[in-house]
Length: 276
Image (cartoon, rainbow, N blue to C red):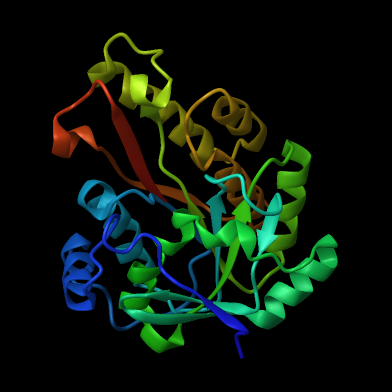
């Protein structure tokens, strides 16, 4: 039983706070009705964590793919936007709440993983971090009460530490989710390398996607460290795990906030990728 519940912080901003409206918005994000007859397990996926109005359709593409498969524990890797808590923050003795209900954590897997990595349970990094929470309504919509997660917030880790975490996760009977938006371009983000973002932004992001498809962990991490791909560290961990499992990546969708706002001066991009 969870010792406490982590209350939602993104409801009402990233997604609706009303449960019925949230369920409707998630439903409309899928390109088709999700599968109800399922078999096997998906190895992993990359999904965005922006406001649903901007990235919901791209997230819906990969969660539609996930709907073809049976549920098992979902290890959700999120970047640490706040700087709070441990650099590898695993929270296994709490539950997450969203307007669609409560999601329990997998205490057994979490405790064992902390033991193997010589870590302690950490709540602080999760308390104000939205990147994991934003994934949950999609998972709740698909799997309801069968859902169980292990949330991990990743902070300031070296490449070797990220690989070590990926190797440990590869051994688990779990589907691994990396929560990440892609490039943040504009004065608001302090990152303006492109003179023509309309043309150059997608080209840059596709270089990153290509490295992910090749499971080129080192080169992707090097590119990510020089970019504003906020979840490049969770993606690096996922790639290492997928490489060790022999999984095959499948690029599904790409979009930008400018598709909605028409503003390319300050724009964020999103991609979704599955790993079979």
